[in-house]
Image 1 (cartoon, rainbow, N blue to C red):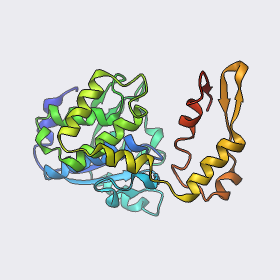
Image 2: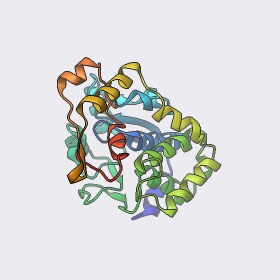
Image 3: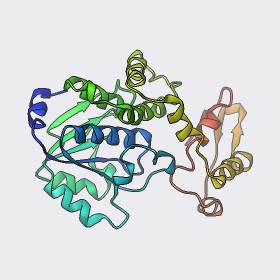
Amino acid sequence: MQKLESLRDFLSSPKKVVITTHYKPDADALGSSLGLANYLKKKGHQVHVISPSDYPDFLKWMEGESEVINYEARKKKKSQLLITEADIIFCLDFNCLKRINELGELVRNAAATKVLIDHHLAPEKFADFELWSTEAAATAELVFELVVNLGDRDYIDAPIAECLYAGIMTDTGQFKHPNTTKNVHLVTAELIELGADVAKVGRYIYDNNSLDRLKFTGYMLSTKLKVLKNLKTAYFWISAEDLKQFNSKTGDTEGLVNYALSLKDVVFLR
């Protein structure tokens, strides 16, 4: 990381910290944010995680989730105040400020020191510190490495390890995607050693379904999935009526892509 020593010095005394992540956070976005938040709280900082929006119910087991501020849920004034008063703002799992919608300009104009931690291409140059690498499979992987490089590996307990493990597990497609590197396995091995219950995390994320979500998935695969065998292509579409019919909530479409990709020799378009 650029200027690691400077960041360590900056964090050597208690600070007002805001952590934010992208719109409709996934497991990596929320897991890396809460993993970092729980670590910084242990170091004596005053920490608030602000999400631009809601996120899936199957992520609500994460340590500290109940304290996350949903900007869209009538929390705009509180969020604005926290960002204005912050000493440091961590921007996790997004590469440009427009990905956090209205929060983007608030963060840009804030007097706080800004830290970008991300693994997506072409990051916008707005931060004072950057921990950015497209070689990382997940932002959670980078957060783990930051904590270790700051000399604080021992601060990672089981809840923090599970938040970070969730981000890595999902962004690697349960370790099936090509971004599953040697380093990914080394990091997850350390997270397991530090207490991550991988069976529990997998169960919460992949096996925690509402009846409406199961019906929605079955309906989409049985009626909307179309396969063009000659083109080795599969696709489906989701209408507003479909979402309303099955009381769909944020995160209910997760997994449909993986089902389509399980078809042999098919490329899924989305």
